[in-house]
Length: 104
Length: 278
Image 1 (cartoon, rainbow over the protein chains, first blue to last red):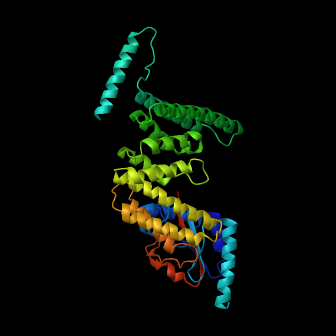
Image 2 (image 1 turned 90 degrees about the vertical axis):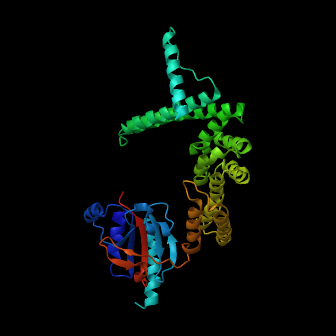
Image 3 (image 1 turned 120 degrees about the horizontal axis):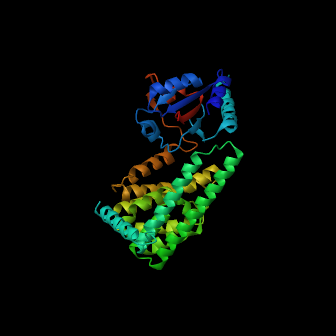
C-alpha cells in the first residue's frame, strides 16, 4: 500500500486531492517512527487507544483493514475498496469533475 | 471442572490397567461421546503437527513448498477422515448428546461447509438439535460465517438458522441465528453492488427491514456478541455509507493531537484509508 499511496500523493500534489487516513494503531509513538521510515506524510485521524475498536472505525462499521472510500469534491461516496490502478483511474475521473466544477 | 476431573481420573485408571496388560494396549474410547472427543483430539493434534512442521519450512524454496503441500494433504486426509467418522456417530443416534457434540464440532469448523459432510451435519442439526439451548456458541460462529449462496451447504445452513429462530428457547441462540439470516440479506446486497446490479436498491430496502426486525426482536439478547449493536452498525452503513450518499463527517484528532474534520476537505477529491501498520 505505502509505495502506491506515496506516489499518488506526490503525483497529485498540485491538484484538488487529499489522502486522509484513519489510523488504528494503539501505539502512537511506535507508529510515528514507522511513518518517518516509510515516509508517510499524509494526514490521519487517530482512532484512539482502543485500536480497531476505536470510535471512528466503529461509526463507519469497518470490519476489515484496509478499507478505502473514495469521495468526490462534494463529499459524496463514489467508490469503495478500489485498489491500485483502479483506484487511481477513479480518482483521476473525479479530479476532472472537480476541476471542471471549480473552473480551474 | 467436575467433568474434567472425572475424565482425568478415568484416563489414569485406563492407563494403569493398560500398563498391567502385556502387551500394553492403547486406551480405546468406548462410548460414542468418548469416540467423538477422541476424534476431535486426534484432528486437533494433526493440525498442530502440520502447523509446526509448516513453520519450519522455507516457503521460498521450491522443494519446501512441495513438502508443505504434501504435509497439508496428509493433514487434510486425516481431518476429512475425522469429519466422516464424527458424522457416522451422529447418524447412528442423531438425537443423542454424542451426536450433538459431533455435529456442533463439524458445524463449528467452517472448512466442512466446502465438503459434503458440512451440508449433512447442518441438516441433522436442524432436524434434531434446533431447540437445544446449548447450541448458542455454534450459532454465533455460523451466524458470522454463514456459507454464502455460492456454496452447496448454504441452503442447509439457512434452514438451521430458521429452525433455531423458530424453536430455540435460548434467546441468545435465537439472536445469533437471526444475525446470520439478516447477514445473508446484507451479503446479497454487497454482491449486487459489486456487480452494479440495478436491483441493489431493492435489496438494500429488504436488508434494512430485516435489520430493523433484528434490533426489535433480538436487540436485548445478552450474548458475547451484541447482536443489536451489530445490526445497528449494518443499518448505519446501509443508510449512510453506500455509494451515492454524502459521507458522514468525521471529527477527530490527527496523530499530533490537532483537531480536524473530514469536511475541511470539501472541494477536494478525498481518498479515506482506514489503515494500521501491522
